[in-house]
Length: 216
Image 1 (cartoon, rainbow, N blue to C red):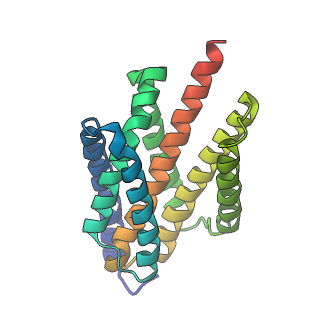
Image 2 (image 1 turned 45 degrees about the vertical axis):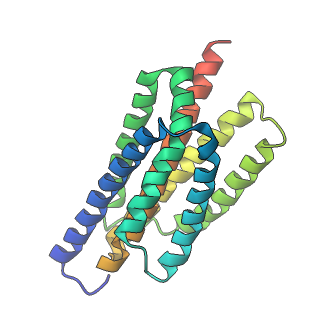
Image 3 (image 1 turned 180 degrees about the vertical axis):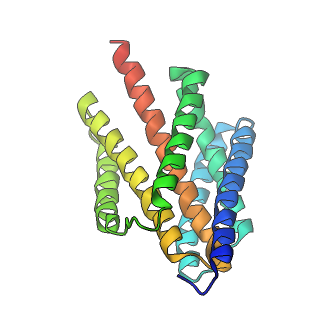
């Protein structure tokens, strides 16, 4: 733990979760704005988001991620989510997209509750999560050249869901057990935002696969 009292530690933790709520609002605004952006601008936005992501990785090592950067990143992230959400809305309907978001929020609440117990240590997940993300990225790149069968697509999706639930457990548990400094709060918020959004996308993918399978 950093040299903070329990009250200060709880206050900083509350700032992290309030910050996560703010990033989701920012992404929501970005998603709304994305409806009015011409399709030709989406690829530059995706490239810009990747540049910001790698910049965030570099800045976090220097503990220099600020709120303006985090909110700017999540705004752009929301814009790039618009075509994905539009496609899933057309495929499975607005109600199921909303349900996918609620399932994601519920999963985050449950995992945060479990991971917030100081008596539980999820640090052992670190090595498995690192290996899992390599497998996930490798499979994602492979799918660009070799179409997956339905069974493999389901397996890939379940792996993604398990992986980002694991990241939520790992990140919240580390926050609980070791605390955070005020300077680190924006960076931690950004990590949790990425956990949340990636889990949401994999749950959406699962809903889409189920809808496709039911039509056969």
